[in-house]
Structures are given as C-alpha cells and as structure tokens.
Image 1: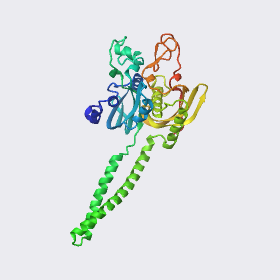
Image 2: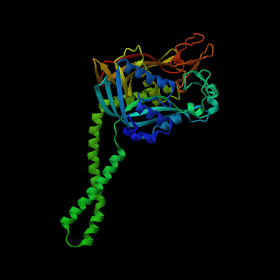
Image 3: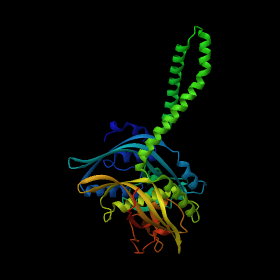
Image 4: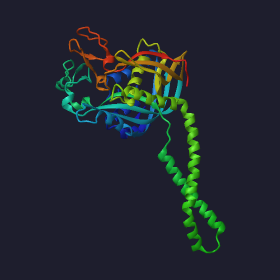
Length: 415
C-alpha cells in the first residue's frame, strides 16, 4: 500500500495516536510507531502466525475521521488531580478496510468493512515523578528506570529524551463500526427539504396563479416554512427507516447490544466495590489485548486464528469474590478470521474467559508500559515476558497488580 491510496491518513500524522494509527494502517509492511513493548508483542505474535502458514496479508485502510469524544472519560478518572503520574485517554479513528489474504500468488479471500481503531494513550503529568518508573528501552527492549534511559541505556548505550518515551500507546483494539453519518444525514434532510419546498411552491404557484403576482408571492412566502418542516418530517421518518434497516444488516458484526450493555453496568458496579478508579473502557482494552495474546502465542490451542476483531461487547456469566481475589467469568464476542483446510473465512465466535485479580489492586496502565520490581531482590521484571525474576528466580503473582487470564475456552454458543 502506498500513500497515494490512503491520502486521508496524511493529515493525521502529527500526534502520538495518529502516528500509531497511521503505522497500523500500513502494517505488516511498516514498523509500529509510538507503541509500548506489550502492544508491539501482540502485533509480532500475529505476524508470526501468518508467517507460520505462509500467508501474506495485504491491508488497505482509508481513514475517515478522528474523534476525541470519549477521551474525557479516562482523563477524568486518571488525571483528576495533580498528583497523578500518568494520564490516560482513549482515542479512535474510523477506517474503511480491505483485507486481502494471499498464499503464494493465490488470493484466498478478501474482506471489506468499516471499523474503529481504538487506542489508549498514556502520557506523563509530572516528569519528575516518572523518573523512577520502569520502562522498556525503545531500541533494545531492556527494562530500566526512565532516569537510566534518559542518561543512556546501559545495554545499547542509546540516549533518549522524555518525548521519545511518552506519550505512548499502551493498548489498542478494533471495534465494529456502523457509520450513521449523522451530520451527513441531517445536512441531506435540510437540503432535500429546501429543494422539495421550492419545487412544491413553484408547482403550486404555477397551478394556482391568478394574475396577482405580489399577493401570490406573499402567500407562498408565508406558507413555505410550514411546507419545509412538513417535508423535513417526511424525509426524517424515511431516513430513520433506512438507517434502521442498515443497522439491522450491520448488527451481524456486533455483539448483542442489550445483553452486553447490561453486563457493562454489572461489571462496573461490581468492580467499584474494590477499585474506585476502575474504568470499563480501559478494562475492555486490556482484556482484548490479553485474549489476543492467548490466540496468537506459539503454543496456543487456537492456532487456526490468523486475525481477530472484537465485536464490541462482553456478557457476564458470574462475578464473585473468593479469598483475597475477585473473579470475573465472562463471554467475550469476536469476529475472527480462521485459516482451515487451505481456506480463509470470517466466523463469529464467543469465548468464555475467567479472569482474576487481587481485590486490593487498583486500576493503572503503567505496569503494562514495562514491568515491576521483584519483591525479593528488587530487580526489574518485564511482566509481559518474564514468569519469574531472572536474577533470584522468585516467581511473582501478576494478579497482585492486574487482571490475569485463568482460562479461555471457545463456547458452543453463537450470536
């Protein structure tokens, strides 16, 4: 894909999210910019799966529009006081995608659809407070403190500025998108109503003209607003039926709305008992990222998945507390690309997922920028790649800090 095919992206290449979204639009033919190590790992695993089957993916993405309309939700939760080290916002862009899958020179399948690329952007509120936080060296991946990276990585000797490290994409996922084009629809209704009003008045004027030009013009000038609103009402009703049909057709790509919307409230209310900073949007993104790791890791039992897209919802099976942990038993809805018997198809699938976390843990995103310190020897641990400390051998329990996936199974249910 070249930039001539995707000119709409070019005007969005200035900020952190836009650079990431632009590089994702060119993946797998370009490196991913402004992403944390855990995000890059997720993308690399998928590329390895494609390479394993000898499949070449050609992805053509045309950007539509950027929106920060949900950014304030996370900003308010995480940056409501000046003592907060990190600030988190969620951004998204609408893109029209064409996905072509090749094996050799043979086109196995092609898919065209619209979606929203959502990403969590982590930035720094106070540079002094972040100096002792752990981060990955953007060059070699070593886990060091931010201060050490600013002084120069002791492994690859690369020096960085704070702008090289932050802001950074700490998570991303894709949501299905049904373009309602509200502004376009409303504009079309106004223009259509105006044209219909003019034509209607002209026709009536011609039919009923009695030779008194001034009187007739005054009458139709007074009546035209009522005629305009009448046509606007008719067109609005007609367009509503059109979009209802359109949404009904597009709903096959989305999780059941009422069921998942209710579950969202249930999860938020349950977690609010333990974590006042819990935000469903950030939780949702983290879980999708963890599940994609489960799908694409080398020894995965879901080895026939070559691409995975979240369908925008989860439903609750069971939420409970046991001993010192909370447990979430959920159904998560996906629209996965499956490679089987030399064929590629998209399939709607439900996965039953069991998660756990220490009930005293609090929502944060900085743990997934790089890691934590070993409680035994103080060494830096990369939570996305290390199971135990490389120096003293001590194992650590990640559920003390964040959600852990205990089990994932493909459900027999469909939607």
